[in-house]
Length: 275
Image (spheres, rainbow, N blue to C red):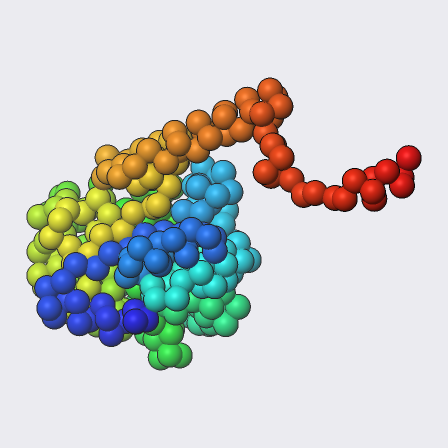
């Protein structure tokens, strides 16, 4: 059954946990979907994991549209949420609605995600008024990494914790159907989750959020440039891939691959006539 924003709301009401993973291509999206994951986030983390950037700042609308369309073709049941990249919504409410619409029309997303609290409430209101579901994102918001002075836990002081709570309530009131909380102290994330009617999705925010999200390359041990504290590696797929690549290189070099079973036959008389 296709997951929708109503699925998220029902999960919250029933006390059921929501599962989300990132994906950026058709094949991975298909595998995640077949595993029964509730939602796929086409994150601007593709800047790090797929494009090799040091951050997400350089990711463009064209990048997001391209990758989201690939994922949408592979996800039959998971709710596909697409990140709005840096400066695609901060510049004006008009830009926000137009770019959100492009992600839906061209990228085939079913919802969009944007970072920020009270400062993006006008954008959230306008995007949802246009019939586009919005997932908000608070805490460590990677597009603001330069303003934060690095990748740091957010909401640890009384003032910062109060601001996070106020922002969470503000984005909910503006119409967001879900909220990602990244690198937020567990007890604060639990309190925000208790106060909100909408689903909270944690990443480095403890077990009491309504759901969890991870970058799939992180949880599979495929991306090792850096491994955040909040990541659990559920498998060492990266090592399996490297060993397979080594085995392939060795067998090709030794002439062990390909064998006759990997080839196609032709009648001897056809070959004889060529001499």
